[in-house]
Image 1 (cartoon, helix red, strand yellow):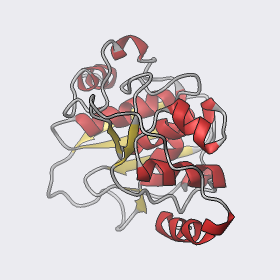
Image 2 (cartoon, rainbow, N blue to C red):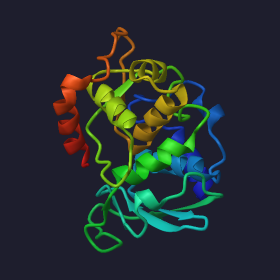
Image 3 (cartoon, rainbow, N blue to C red):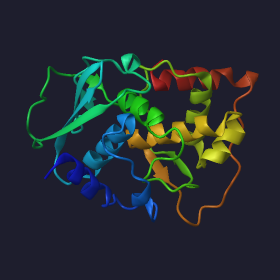
Length: 228
């Protein structure tokens, strides 16, 4: 099966339906479109019932090889060195099996930062295609973003998503950031694969406001947890 067909087929499947929106397929961009195509490929591999390796060839930058079984990649390019808007990203998948050795020297580089970068820049005008437009989400676990120079606003939004459900609009209003920034942050965690969608019956409770000066200890603890 061609890579594009495999991606489209996998994205029509769901993983318990937690972040899939009706009609999302109509919003799926072309699989070759820069980080958008890479994000779609990542999502397809995450949904695949068979283990796959993923190779991304980033125009004018280099190649990364991802092993999702161990949440690691080859680390030849650190996440901080990746471009914001690559001209193109080629996509290849390779079959593997649960007991196969890593295809690069162990331990590789931790995957969260790479996927966060891809997701943050993949869909600047909208939420990721598999996520409901006005959906509310929270983190299923804390990410490891030590390889990325993320801002204090991103740390604040990460803390909020670790504490409760929020839509992009709620996150933007509470954190005091532009809607596009909040939306990209949700997209980033969606591609990392650590967002949990709110149950339909979950009431919209206000998020805790951003920590103020007396909560500096919380920020220090959160920065430690995120790997800074």
